[in-house]
Length: 318
Image 1 (cartoon, rainbow, N blue to C red):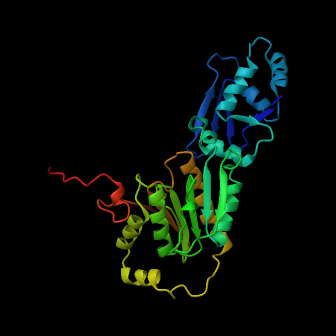
Image 2: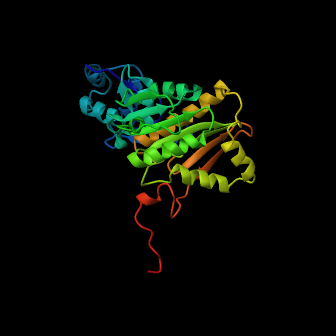
Image 3: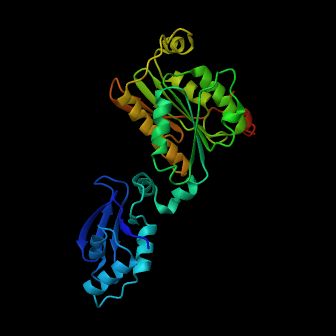
């Protein structure tokens, strides 16, 4: 027999015997008022009872003793509360429960994640950390498969790295424009969504999530970035000079954890079909200024990289 308990990621506030306010936090997007319109006077007590584990038989016995005049269909009530994520099976994986709480049952996160394949590509600390956090995010518990592959040489990107992947995450400790453009070309040919995540000095860049045929590609993102900085020549020198980076260094662990965590949120949001975080935009975490910027990415009418995959450009006056 399955035992249930209250979802530990939610907060429950008793208003009356028949009304309970449920929310994740004081400023959370998710909040609802659970109400018993029949006025049985047992709803709040029932949720209070579920603070500790209980099964159908225990709850039925409790209901008979606590409210003998109330007819309570315990299996139906538990099924309803479980479907809405208000109660969860006892012993559930906390990360998986959190996932289902952030993405409600209406979006069926388990159905979306089941059989999805996420490839994490990279050789450094960021890729290792991201793969580890993704493995404990609840996504694999919901049925997603995680693959870990090294970063290829820019002039030799195998098509197999993208084959069969639902999403490819490219995690680099330092930006590599040549490699990112080579990966962009490969993703466009295979129509595989991918997400670049990398450190650029004191800045962590997450996204945007590139979906071939639907969103801007990496070339459009880079051109937009170039047009938004004041020292373009200086930036291009750093990007393309072979000796610009000097000896390789590992980013500070606390910064890696922050950037990796944001990337995991973006990955899970993409897999469940939620338009959040990096859908059509990049998130830039500037550790030097302690700022977070959101860079929306526009598509070019005739992008040299992904333009040929679109419908022919039509003159608006014809």
